[in-house]
Length: 300
Image (tube, rainbow, N blue to C red; front, side, top):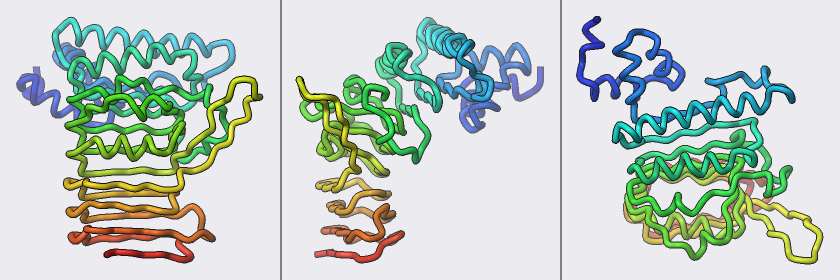
């Protein structure tokens, strides 16, 4: 046995956590000791590219490829549960699968991670930067309410292929420990959900909101014609811990964060005016504005 393999398990897990996902998975082939270390590694990371290549997916083998993902995640999560180990980090990146057929499985995996005291949730079900308006909402994964019931999460990353329904406006939010939030290319039933979600995270330090959209849910008796539009505005108040923010795609932004040090804004509408209000941001040290034609800048 090499000297590294003989290190305490906690140190070996720390080594794996610092490696890229693909490389950390490969360590299981090094030796029996490393295989055991991998089996107890509390970070559950599933990237479809690690299990099969997109160019290998065909109509005939599609379901077998998905079954491979489901089987792998099921075995790994159940082993961690049987050993009494928490899933500290759950990461799922599936860029090119039909999420509708496996939504139940994704719900279950996230529920297990949250209930075991998970600290990081990273869910990416679409390519970053893709145009959400080309899909109807029923083809997007519906984010379960259980996500905002976690008191242990410190980092929440949601990217593409995900829709957030009206129930998030009234459901209790318990993200008391979240320090990092990243919301990219999501579809919301109401743009007020974003503000409500963020405002209920008192410890948030790092915020990213990029190219999120809203849609009009279907009305009974009326043909389903979905109208998508980018979220127009973002008004945030009382974020005393916020130090870093990145906002893209919104025309009007208000941030009340006395300790904000860094703000980056990227405009997707060069011909449209942009209103930026940094009321009470007295500690701002770095400001980056991209693709702006006219600015209504206010700092009282």
